[in-house]
Image (tube, rainbow, N blue to C red; front, side, top):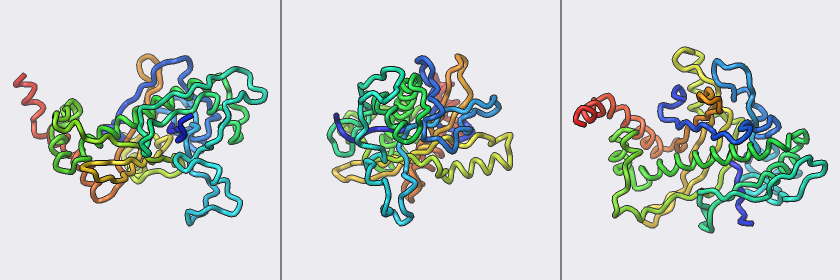
Length: 316
């Protein structure tokens, strides 16, 4: 889901989780050989739907042979990975042996600025992704499905970044500014524009990221426990993926590194039969981030509970 290169060449889950129906382009379902979700493919099945395991992704991941103290083991492959995304940095664009179809080698630029400041991150080409899958041992990958897989992954990454940009728009200038926006309720806050005098606010940048599909976030664990206690109110599948994105926040010349956590959930297909995903994007818990999260959630709850929304509709 979050596969970039650094080089240039559900309402139950979260009341404000953003829904992302995937635009139909051929077969939108990535092949099951995609390595990212190896241990959690069944989590891709929407609740109350027949078992239809969705794909695993070729996203970045933490190599399993990193020693527990954070260093490299003697025979670790860790040094082969790009430290910014934990992926191979030397993947070929050449056609693989016995490859049945030709795959595009063009790489699509993202809208996500690099933390280094030299342009935006780029997505891998379908050929690079296919070569990565083969290199990881997924030799039975259906080459005809790789283009659709790349399209879905890129689409969800762009959605995750939009969520992060919105969070930074509110809170990068401090908690008081964040509350000023959040107390308007989610719908109004999303429609608010920066004051002309604040147009110079530096946009966030993505420094690095990694996939952690085997590490469920505390929030996701809590939701699963609540679902076990009260399935009717909280029952939902586990997230099929998790990413940690490290973002540079800059305001008044001061730079901070903010870690964002992204849980990926699948939802029921839309009326056209296309898959739908929900992204739960939020900063990882720190004292400041905890206040930010409470402000955003509490501001929306207060706005609706106080009757402000109803009063505005009446006045209109």
